[in-house]
Length: 389
Image 1 (cartoon, rainbow, N blue to C red):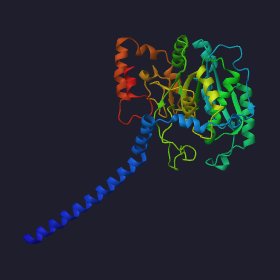
Image 2 (tube, rainbow, N blue to C red; image 1 turned 180 degrees about the vertical axis):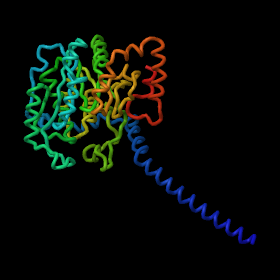
Image 3 (cartoon, one colour; image 1 turned 120 degrees about the vertical axis):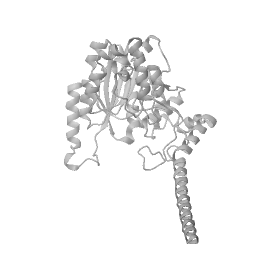
Image 4 (tube, rainbow, N blue to C red; image 1 turned 30 degrees about the horizontal axis):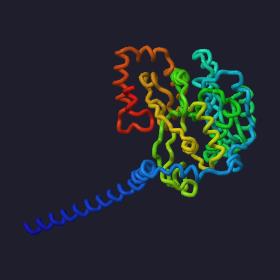
């Protein structure tokens, strides 16, 4: 009986050991797969950026003749307002990247943070807000019964622009893979229509901008007469995504290097007018087939020796926490559509400044920001360091 008991235990030990071995092998393979997909690619990218750093080679490789480069900008304007900035001391030209069908988003922006009358009357500065878009095309993911025809949508855009006078449209197809064309549109328009604006900003149409905070900050920067100014959420040493399942997939043929030059998240960033002019000139010499617009901006900036600067209260792809201590210093927050009206009302309420001022208000907000921002899973919005600013 003792021998039988020992054999049973021996069998159980073998079974347990085999199970652990299999689980361990699975875990090792899983970890290895994760390393291959994330850590290794970032290690290679950072090694390239900091050790090899042949971004000069990238610039040289992407430089093309002017005639060829102009094919990325020589689109005809379908909707345009060449006198939008004329005769005005423009603090900020704000371009919002939008799709033709996003009518409600544009309406919400005009009623909240993008309201030019509010900015002029309440904040005492001139900010020109315009929307950049291409031509509408069929959306495969939308059910056939809910689609508006291209012709109907074009008519609606003309009516919308007649009412608001703020749509800038060129005759390229409005699509994700044409975002770089939309970026070039913005720099071309500023160069020819609004070059005297002191600052330029590009933003997505699902972003929230705390306009009072932003205006106050840019007024301070303007008094300092800043140059080579480029702020936002900075991505440093980012590797190209090689997975074909990702919308950000970039094939080797398009970009064969292991790292992108530093760039700011395309959700929203600000540059000074001297940088805007330099970027415009760079677009006249570089191959713009790379369809990730914020990366292309980084390539252009690197070509003219301009580097991005991190601002703790510009978010990346993340949404900032809802709290008065966040609103007090908020610049941008990404991913707002249905909540934009409520957020605008809450974030610009005068009591926010009252509650967050003074020694007790500042101490309270430091504690709250630590709680809200300094979390392990907190990602791609304001960094933990913002809690101490």
